Image 1: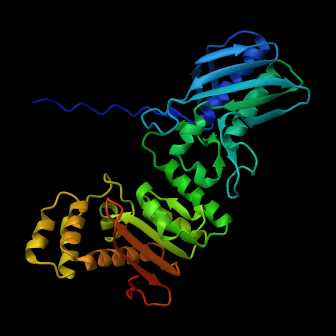
Image 2 (image 1 turned 90 degrees about the vertical axis):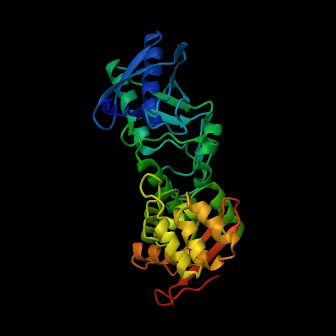
Image 3 (image 1 turned 45 degrees about the vertical axis):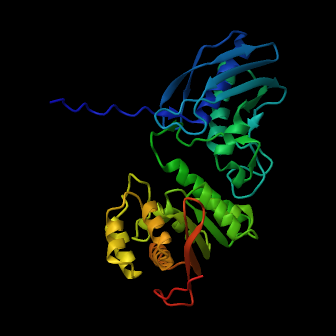
Length: 376
């Protein structure tokens, strides 16, 4: 008998903000000492002192420049492996100027923690860079200030895999991080991006949000409501309950949910975190809904023996039971209203197939009693 080996602890990584701070310190040291650096230590917001190995470090009489490779640990995100380059140069006036170069996005919409027109370097990384650089200036008794320029050569391409474009951050990635480290398999970053996207939508005047579970469902939502501004379309991923609560708390009154059978079969049961590891598809529940839709006994048994929710959807669509999908949508609406205490004027659910074909939709309006549904 082979003994089970204990799971290895997950390795955390470091944020783009930490990498930029380390790069700024190394670049400044190279400029002051006129010598290349190989490693540099910084203090991150959680109170730890961390050493970073540099990918490269160069200098002239006018500037120092250091590059690091961003390591996301065992929870690699879109920026994992990205080269982050920081150039530091002296300036006559005191203080630390911070800006973004190539591959660092620029803010063009309200609702973000950085003002419109500024580089998308969030407040905590800005504070880290400023304080770390000032410590070095004080240590060497240098009275004039410096300019810090953060660049990410592949940033514009990496940003296509993020929500930046929707948030109005154009031209590259954001420099982020409130703790300094990336916690493996944490959902915090994605949830934060969803909450931020909702804030941007509210600031832009949206009162109707279309929340989708992924790219294909978002595209379908856009085709349904082409008149809505792009900020109204938000990929909530698996965080259905979180997105609904955030929307309700920020005053949104009209919601459209767009998803596929797998995730929305869970929402119909009141499961609001729909990742496959969080909740399995309940085929007995799907069979019960088929009974309510007056499916044959044979079809109900096929559903009980199905492998995926998508397979169930195909079975019901093939046999013409479109009422089945309407029933699921109705249940999703009721579950969504229950999650937020009935806090929307209008909630609508749309279920589509893997081929992005409409299977069913239904809506509930505030003037109707809970339980009275209007199919649309």
